[in-house]
Length: 154
Image (cartoon, rainbow, N blue to C red; front, side):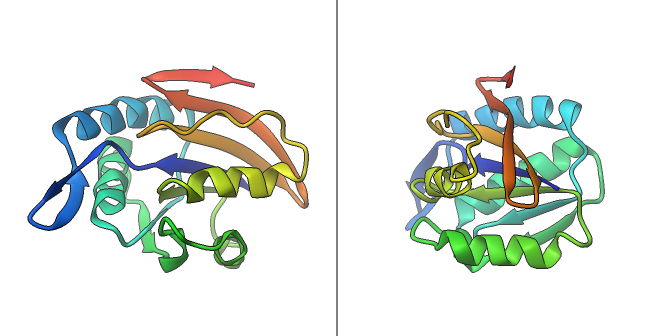
């Protein structure tokens, strides 16, 4: 199974909610193009927060596929890594490549949580960036990182 952890794009406050800024939409689109060229996504799982839902929608649109969409409450900024991974493991029988759209600090915590399996150095998550991990049992391998429209393979 492949897990892609993506941080939502740059956000601003509008009408009492945090939504993607125009720059945030552009950076997500730029990274989504690269992501969708490199990987076939099976499902997009998002935090219920508006900025994460908007990020997920941009990726789904860019994929050109009729992707399954799910919302996971554990993907909020204060979410729990074990709950997220329990959720992922519960759907992994159906899907091979899962995109998780979340927030700081959870994206970094998730990467560090999986790092216990020695995947290597974790890059810093800037807005709109995505970390690609290949999971085989308890072994996680860092495959790449997408930021600023650039795909860095590991």
